[in-house]
Amino acid sequence: MRDILVVKCGGNAAVRSEEICADVAAAHRGGRQVILVHGGSADIDGLAERLGVPSRRLVAPDGVSTRYTDERTLEVVQLALAGSVKPRLLTELRARGVDAVGLTGLDAGLLVAARKPAQRALVGGRRVVVRDDHSGRIVDVNGDLLATLLTAGLLPVVSPPAMDRDGRVVNTDADRAAAAVAGAVRASTLVLLTGASGVLADRHDERSVLPVCRVPRRGTPPVVTGGMGIKLVAAREALLAGARRVLIADGRRPHPVREALAGSGTEVLLEEE
Image 1 (cartoon, rainbow, N blue to C red):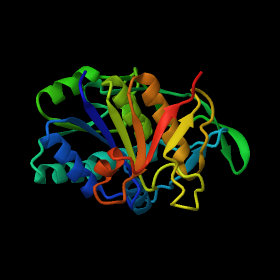
Image 2 (image 1 turned 90 degrees about the vertical axis):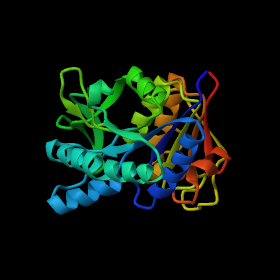
Image 3 (image 1 turned 45 degrees about the horizontal axis):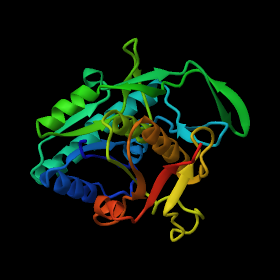
């Protein structure tokens, strides 16, 4: 059984991507197969502001928040992730002697998503139906492409967007993209690095990190505030898809991957049926 580590570099501005790249490079040089998945919320928001494109969120009835992606926002997402965040990560990795390959979900059908033609959301406290959101859920991953790159000794650096089966570009959450990738390659560990110490019992107290958080196999996760809801949904999807271990940990600290693997954050487990 292959020992594949999937690391998701969060897009929060406080997350230290250079430290994440240093740890990822060290693991790669040590002989471990590693896939780095990234978002870029801070870069997307910053570029959207410069271009005059409003940044908006959709809140599902269960309280989980996601980015609202109309056509203009979809263009911003692609520009920010492929044109800013990914080159920065690739440069960091190359400076540490790692041969990394930058990919979006559009490359060779890496990420295939199904776009919802309509979805329910809460806007201003009212339940509405949104029909112009270009977002979707990943339904397939080209695991053969990732396996080929890993076997060749390369380190894939993956990000949204994805493509639907009709060839249309679809935005997708980066945590859930990381989960789908981890499931497709049967990762030994998925590390979701974020701008928090882990899953907190009290979101106002950084010291209240839960060493373990159990999530139901379906339905609303136990924590939805502070952007943690979507991460717990992603963790659940990774475990159900075949990843053996999922950790949510602090991406703001030195050696974030190493510290997460040593137990500094939260391990997510599935509740018993």
